[in-house]
Image (spheres, rainbow, N blue to C red):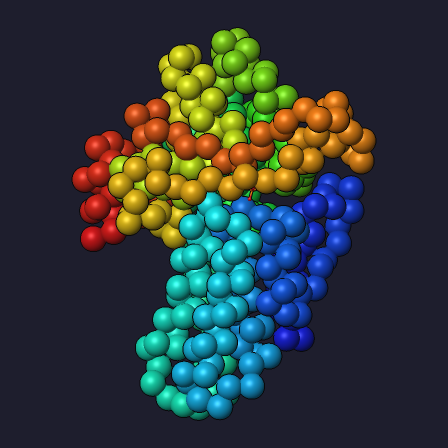
Length: 340
Ligand code: MRU
């Protein structure tokens, strides 16, 4: 992700791994569409894109004072916020951008626009640092010879560039640990096989793709001794929403006594929510399931259910790897400390 010539450039994730192409966003609509259609995806990445979307909205504004600019920014914020409901990083970033205007009383609109751009860059650079720290804390859980299973893509593509779950794996690799990573392909949009495998291969990590329904066997065969995934929103009790299929994986890990960890920055926590039942789950177009590579694979007239996320209850999570360290149960008390 890159801000240049007053535009936001995104690596188009819908085209990977076949094509490496940047998509340029010049307006609030462009950014909203890019998030909705998953040109950019992954919780921290959509938060960062949203922040630059606000910059583009402010740039187009003809406001003459702070209040008028605030009105335009709130309008842009509502449009961008409607793109996807589950990952809280999106709303967290929009809130930070709004606060720039609330905290600066000047009516110098040009200065306010500069401050908005500065805040978007700060969100981007803070995420870089945060991911490095998650990588450091997460890699301490990984030993030489480990078999690790991950789901969806919680890598550089889903963040500012280093990832959360994959940050732990990248850092372990950089430390010279020999590890083997199994990646669920992640139906229906294949973030695992298209994106995670692409990133891990580029980092020189031993990577094997499995279909989502092979995870049970791989765990039973003892090929995996650690599961790490990312998260899109974590409630105050530690319940964690992540890509659909994560919950099944956590149950399988429990059944095979393999520790299941979630890696996420503090911007992914929604401490206003007491439990995971309160997390809104995005429902996506049934054709994402019913149509594969342009061909319909489900008989016409058959219903398709396509929730994009599920919630893993905290009792299945051994620890949550954050930039401040690994939080372990009891989550309510320990997460409250994390945000103190
Ligand atoms: O629908 P997606 O591809 O945006 O879902 C992404 C995930 O579920 C990731 O695991 C999550 O956002 C963590 S990204 C560091």
